[in-house]
Image (cartoon, rainbow, N blue to C red; front, side, top):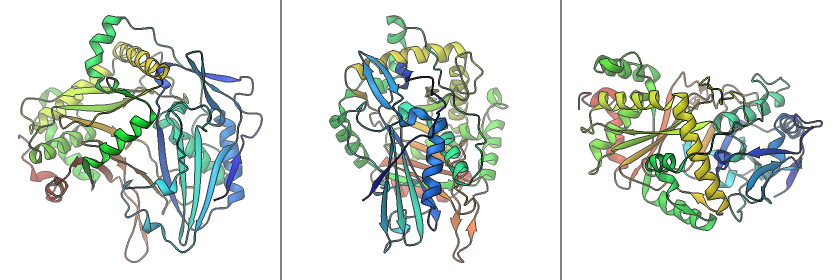
Amino acid sequence: MPTFFVHPAQPTALSDRYEVELPGYELWGIMIQNVHILVGLLDLKEFNAALSRTLQLWPHAAGRLTDDDGKYKIYLTNAGVPVEFEERPHEETSSVVLDSHVIQSDLSGLLNSPRQRNAFDSEVPLLRLKVVSFRDETTIGISWSHTLGDATAFFRFTHAFSQFYQGLRPIYPPPTFEKPVFPEPSECTIEELRPLMYYFHELYNEEELRKKYSEKVHTSERVNWSFERQGLQTLCNSLRQRSPSAANRLSIHDSLFAYVATVINHVLPSQIRKIKTTDSYRSSGASFAFPDVAGNAVIDALTALPENPTDMPGIATSIRETLTHYRQHEVISTWMSAASHLMLAAARAGKSFYYPPSTEIMPVNSMAAIDWCSPHFGQPESHRHHMSEHGLLYLRVFGANPWRGDDGSWHAPEGRIDISVGVPRGCGQKVLDILAQGLDSIKIDG
């Protein structure tokens, strides 16, 4: 398969610098990988030109990660970003992407994902793309190192790429590259927060981690489902009536997370006792929160659930109270200080942290606030966005994709919410049966 290298247009936004320093909290040793599907063929000349212009604004994506005596940096090498091309003229995309749900089983064949020696391998590009031309459609697979930024940063990069491809200007502000530095935490602070950061307890090298995640996938089966936004709003209103202490603050997300936890707790013999929610502080207004930073601005908020594991209003209220606490600027700063310290220590040891599967903790990562269908490369009605992988009780939330009807016409998602969650093997159909009965099938008061 041919591979081409695309370089940033010159001069770049960082032409006066030769490196971007990375605090410990930027050292996520994983990739975020998305696949975009377009009808027909790409204009490859415009595609390469658009990528070059995008890299001009985001030149760190064309750099290389380096370890400078325990200090991590991205050297702005302006190295070429590899774009792999493959033709499958006798296949349709439906042979790989089975339906319109965002999360799919295996998209590895649509991604440019060579193995690397470790999570911070300086020889491996931080950004890699793959374009596959099928009989009917074209896929664009984008692999983005988490050290370049969180999902919001990745989205804005992709959106700018889409705009340039269409001959349009980016609609989001250009990225900034100054990273806040949090104070070094005391040992007391680290020990106090360590139980809330359970995923920092297990550290592994790249090969061990790959094996762990492979085993993790086989312990569960994936459940995909979509909800109408109006139905979720009705659920939220019902929970607000039963949660006077948080009535004006409960969100649709609080309600959705509580509903999914309640459904699963009706099925599993062991109960979910905690919910870990990944939350962005990018727009919090804190002095250390830079809205346009090309970096990571997320924390994890751990919620302890009420004694009754099917008390939906109680679960929703607990989630809201936890998020309210974690969004205090001082709390964010303290949490980030400890997390940054632990992440840097792991990187220096040549290892990465691991999210161990648990039947007691439901990790939640919602990207519903990110309109992943808007980087549509000129196809607003038919463009779809997909990701893959799942883990035990890992709940992922997205805005839904459009879907094609039997008559061949495309249907807009109209605010639908798409979820994916891993449940123990043998439990998937039971969960689907409850979901199929509707949001009002479970007694709200537990």
